Image (cartoon, rainbow, N blue to C red; front, side):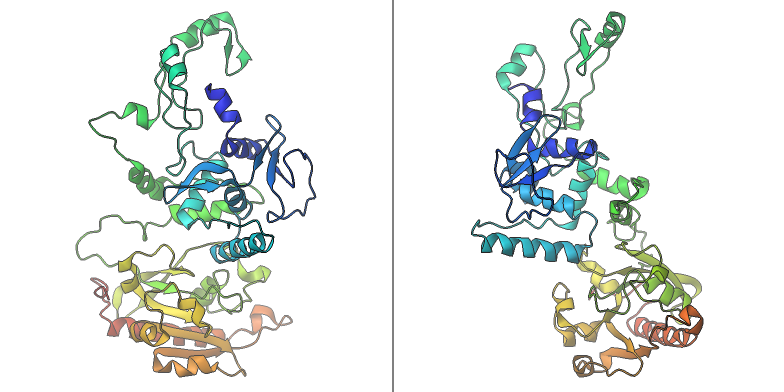
Length: 431
């Protein structure tokens, strides 16, 4: 089969082209249908119709070249991950579970495969065209007989199927008619392959870790209006604190503060920075919350004299430990909680008694409301405090009591860090 035919028969490539052409595919209820209700659920749809570049339908159960845990991911899961590219991790997981339940209820069996953060990020980056290769996408298979007949090596990876042959006679290039003089010039070009073709040796070598390390320094900026994927990518690229780079002996790691991902939490990623840095509380869903409402990681600096009187400490704020390595837990100095135990299911210490024996807990409620019984039952390991209710008339002008609450929180964090061995030369031992 020719490489062009392979590309036309590949659903993953069709999806990438439709996104590039701003002509998204259409979920349909049959292979013959070319139109669909805009609200047709993926639990009801059976096929995905691509109007361009050539009209074609693919079953949503079709396995793709994208592999997770060495298993092909079906087209429904790939398309669903793209549709949910702008949502936060907890919302994506919850939506995937709901769609799986709907598929089971409809009697179709199977479920939507939940891609982990790194896989979903790599997939979205490739689909948007910001990257020409992906370590999770298998190469297109080619016809060995056709490759040998043309005298070209087999395609090994990449969207275009490997190294392209030279333009013969200069009749066309990339499907376009060109000047004969240009054809002569093109015929003398040196054809470049991808890393699998060029880097030869006695055994295959995986250089994907080099690319991941380079991303932490170079990054990829894709500021597209109306899309929030760039914030997810930049959070990973601008995250040298969580990248496994060798550190100098005796260097101090950045302490980590975990927030609650609950929608009922008064403090979330959107308003925690202004609260802890400026001592001002604003509702997390208001327009005053700032531009970090889709951020997955934040940094703030704070002087803690009893820990280090010469320089401020830089704190990392996240609302999920999904990307944690085992040694990161020794760097967690505080956990904000709403009193809901489901928050700790993915933690190293899933029992509240074990968790708050090792990490300071912080509960922030509203003044005049009772502290939940669950928080009271966790004992002295959890600090409870309260802030004034938000008043739309006074706005931030009436928030003068917030600073007192924030100073109390920082005081507790400082005391907890000091008692666990944090100092100017390093953090505590791995717990």
